[in-house]
Image (tube, rainbow, N blue to C red; front, side, top):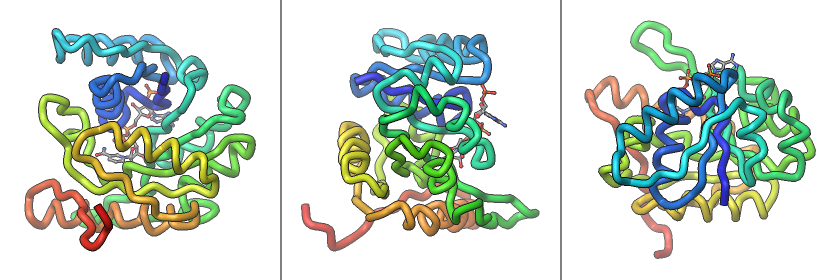
Length: 218
Ligand SMILES: NC(=O)c1ccc[n+]([C@@H]2O[C@H](COP(=O)([O-])OP(=O)(O)OC[C@H]3O[C@@H](n4cnc5c(N)ncnc54)[C@H](OP(=O)(O)O)[C@@H]3O)[C@@H](O)[C@H]2O)c1
């Protein structure tokens, strides 16, 4: 399966690209500039010699031609970026990992995007796509450090059961990530907002935390 990453040149998107390629996906790093995407692709390949990662580079339109497309732009660019690629994204699973947050001094504050969440804004922007949301709480640095496992529970939500299933399948290919079906896209709002809590905990304890649920069946 080929996976495109819009905004794949940032820490989250490039980390995701490396991690997905490390477990066998063909990845296309997307960017507003295909040259920036090529630089990031080259850097990822140089960082992991001998890993034979399947990573291509292109603009966001090129990345949108993949089978499944993640959006890893800042929150306020996610819906417009998806909208610009709407035709290529039509009928596809589109996965938002964006959190609407503001840092005010030492405080992380969740923001309320139009329609309540970034993912809902994206779904409204590309109504012919099947939008899911996931990976909001996995730190980019750990995601991209493919020499080490990244351990976390990962919430997945969508209004489309097939998008939930596809997203869970992708996340579950990454060892030590456990995908958890968190219901419909309306839950993207608290999931995204909770990222502010985790970042605040990170600042307080000078660490990078991940979430684990107890009580789930094995
Ligand atoms: N960082 C984390 O640990 C983490 C963890 C989980 C989720 N997330 C979420 O993942 C998303 C990406 O995080 P990040 O830290 O990688 O973000 P970032 O570095 O600020 O942005 C990622 C990429 O988005 C593109 N971009 C920037 N402004 C844009 C605009 N106005 N329109 C279209 N594209 C734009 C840029 O790529 P080009 O200039 O190459 O187009 C940039 O490299 C965020 O929404 C964040 O909440 C982050």
